[in-house]
Image (cartoon, rainbow, N blue to C red):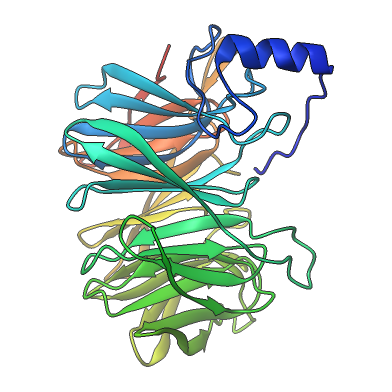
Length: 370
């Protein structure tokens, strides 16, 4: 899903576009919205603050402004578009986006430019605050730069954790990301997701390579322990990606073989549920005793019973209307705050899939900016 395609323009054309769009060579934030801005392309992350929904998307139409935050009211009326600029010729590939409404911050990771963007939440509006460069050398397996993706906010004190997939680090910042508190190096394992436990006294990390789930202490940040994942067939698990941490335990999706793993907070692996071939889970969210797992490759949402360890239903998200495809590439899942609904980003189709959580079915497709 990472797109590093480049458009090479003559200097004259680049200068003209910069003048028209109001982006200086030093600017990281575009000052105006491109005239051809329409429906979103490649929406990946969603988050809420107060009564506002935020969708983070890349948009292939722009050279300078190739990524956007779009703000919607609770009834899905588009309120504002915040265009972002990270590079003159590279598309931006955004990571996770999360809001801390209690302390008034919104955070967004950008993988191509190795940065964390920080916005101030004021009522129902967002105001750009700062860009935090994320340093890190490529690890021995060859990914370039820090390549930040994963992001979480400590519920206890607002501490921010970011996974630097390229360098193998997990980096911690204070609330507002004004200063770095410390970092933990995990080596060449591509840390991808990070989640604080509900008490906020430690964090869990999954990787895009390797056979371990990592437990980090926070005072100061340090590797506390790690647990090996084993598939239902006792083979080593590779690519433990999606991660959910709650009072009941730690749940991790494994990419090869396809499985959902259950970890105790201290004792390690407790059990596993085998998934279908080719699922390659991307995101995992919980509602009560049910888990919702997205499979972009198969265009499906898997619904699992956490207590019984069974698959309840597999929801197909793809719908073809003439030449138009909807619900393609379901990725990030957000349950609530709309009662009885979940919103899933259709990364490949550029829309939002609305799930009916009572009937476990696709209720509608919503195309922001359409």
